[in-house]
Image (cartoon, rainbow, N blue to C red; front, side, top):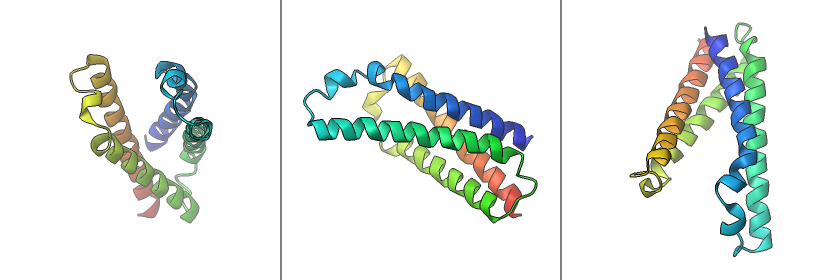
Length: 136
């Protein structure tokens, strides 16, 4: 059952990484970033690319690690523990950093906020569960 969840999460993360390609148009970055210096604008785009690459890496590793859960080992435990901490931090950002005014009172944005909150919670719990199955 754990392997199925890890693979599903992996494919979901690969999809999320691909969705990053649509962020600039969806969030009107060309307009919003027009007044920012060239350096800051390029840093913004490069960081977004590297976030997408990191999420894709997490997705690919989740698919590959799913079969290695049974064999365990310190590398698998460290990887899963790191993933769990990463998604716990992402959940904390979702709940405590993003201003509620960005989504409250807006149906679509509220739905996205709820979906992301549930997704980050699921990923945090899943990787903690996988980590626990390796270290126990």
